[in-house]
Image (tube, rainbow, N blue to C red; front, top):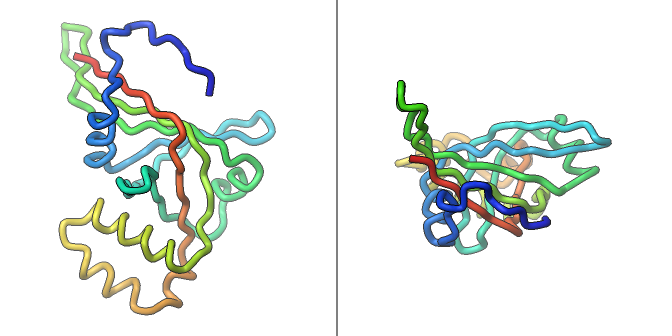
Length: 160
């Protein structure tokens, strides 16, 4: 990804730890992808794997996302912490991260297990009931597709 100059440089967030903190607390990422010059965007809940600096998503085994990723794994995604719009001030309070990277479908059972643990711990206060209900044995992992966004470039912006 070619680096672009941010128009309002005073709003740029360059501290990698601050950006990672946003990824730790966010719940949804909007993911942009493209195939044959035809853009597509989807918003999915995610789990942030801090150790491997990647996002994991769960999805159906078939669908448009998977078809596009197969043809073009390059994606761009954003996570936003929305602090709200300030009426009559024309101001919006937000913190956003934009990331570029590659999206892959995880087939390896052990990585699928790891990814779902990351997702459950990221999204749930108590993941045990969900794990017990939905992931009773190894066969259960075959019923879900896991996507991994490997982050290659990360930027951020804050609005007051």
